[in-house]
Image (cartoon, rainbow, N blue to C red):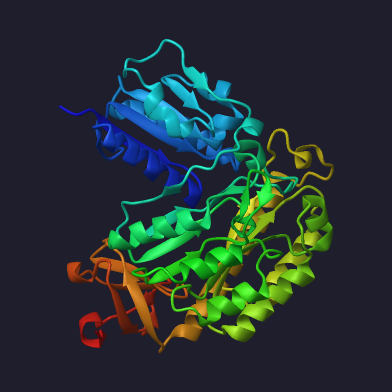
Length: 439
């Protein structure tokens, strides 16, 4: 009888692509993958360490795994495992901890699944990890997250990712295209490009070999993929030529997620971001002038050291005036070994929470305003297999979430529908799917 393995992923889309790749290694080795809530012989937890909360989540997930299967072997990989291996090794029940370079050799480090009296650690200094390991997620039949870049050469003062993932490095264009062709052959209709600093694609062995725009043009030629989505790209790396190319592409969709972090130049300078608010506003204006219906998502951090009430209000007003579609709001948390952790002007926790709440409300308003511009439009929706209270969901090319009555025939299908009205839960509703579908 085959051994059973279960996975749990914390953090970003990049982590999901890597978990899926590790999963395929275990399948090839004869393991059966089961749900995390099932009894497994080994639980593999892929961690994130972007926020303090992510660290706490890791500890909680370990406890949950041992509830399901008290004698199970527990392996921890990922960013938290790179940054604080000994801290993880001290968590009761953990058997092995693997850092950034070692996580893809997990199967080789497991000789048997006997629980260890003391956790083993395989974790070399991040400076020594200069290799690039390809990864993409399979399991969601609708879309895949395709890793094309890893690491980061930027030195934002709040961020631990360069410490956890090392220097910027990338796959080759030829290999990414080959993987995209494999994904297309599997029947998946949408690829989401992922990386730590995606727009910095093209560095190999410390030298720039390609540009992200070169990759975009190459992927646009791949047959069999209906949609390609750019997950997140720095504003200073989102060139006008990329925007113009996406606008005329049949594959690349009108949706950009562009980190801002702060709407004031003072805080952007303290963060060591590589742009100012004027450039950000210019990028948004350029996108909207060429693609009026483009969805634009924004990352923003509240409560950064030195952020006064007026600084926050300036950020709020800047975002309020921007023609954007939604926000991802992060409450600043101090991270060890980052310059920001020792900066003066720490913002009280209750103030951070209040600012976060204000921006979440603004995000809801922005999203609704964007959806209202889409009501009555004809759009292509890629339906997914989720069922919630008799409904299924899908997304338009410009990332409007559509809600429809569940029909198994629609799963992983792209259909043309009329966007009718915004439902009580904020999604776009399509009430008579079958009657308004076109083929």
